[in-house]
Length: 460
Image (cartoon, rainbow, N blue to C red; front, side):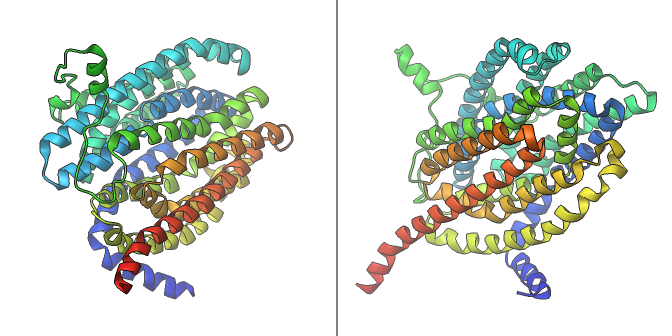
């Protein structure tokens, strides 16, 4: 298909899904803000801290990112999926109960992860990373991760109601506060790694204080109906309310959450294993190059997240596979077009590395191209991946994630000593190719299975 034909097809798809395009546009707002503030923040950090300081900062924030990931473990996706369904059925009590469940489970998980991190960090920082001077900053990063996880409660609440404007506001606040703090440091020419970490913590704390006041207070309730049995009460506390009425929901929320929990643990560890392995094998300056290269991925990451924010609740609202298929086909074409167009960004955007970050980061150019290409693949497959959850494929996704994890770890362990940080970028591209192959295969097979009884009935 020629380029003009692709453009015409893209406009046609946008017209056919006008409301969805508007929703995507609104959900893109926080991503645009995050991309802009993330890029500006990294430019300031790269020039203010240098590659060595930026490398240490990358190690520190990997802790808060991991805590945030462990604080979710599929809880947010489960809550959006089933609370969206309840909201579309105008079952407000069920909607609130699902949000309460998400809050309770999130607090317990993130609290457990934070305690484990505090116990493990001294050994990791001193013996594995061999940078003992950042230990107390890593503890601050744990606090940042806990608060970030709690701040996701309002975001999930508004996403489930498809109120993407408020969702955008909640998501944008912490990064804006961080950027303001960094700009003040730049104006005063006062750069310290300690202060940067404190400013990041303050940004998330402000967000939690503000947005916890604008959603129903009942969401933060731990109250349940007492059964007289402590064991049963504990199970009730962490059991998701069941949402009825959708033929797409082959699993109840608790089974869905169980599979999401396992897969999310694997995804969370995979997401940060490259940085941790680098910390033991490479010097901080190379990690700094890698951190800068990853900043060029932000626009693609946020585009992907904005599209997924809209897709999750929309796909959760369909009652039958047959109803969802036309929607999935249209969005798959649209995502394919976006994936092709993203290749222009993949090639040209990293050329600005030295202009933004300085000559010391010239090695990040090709690294950034590979890392960005990973997200071009992910954008292409995303609608099919989310649709797979509606088909009950979460049972298969967790072991696909296990294969991806093993491949990423193996490539980093064997190739980092010879290829340096380039090995990590190669590992991520292979990671996405594995996902694409398995996901497309499983979805095609499951759709064929769903359509076979219908075809048989038609013949009869």
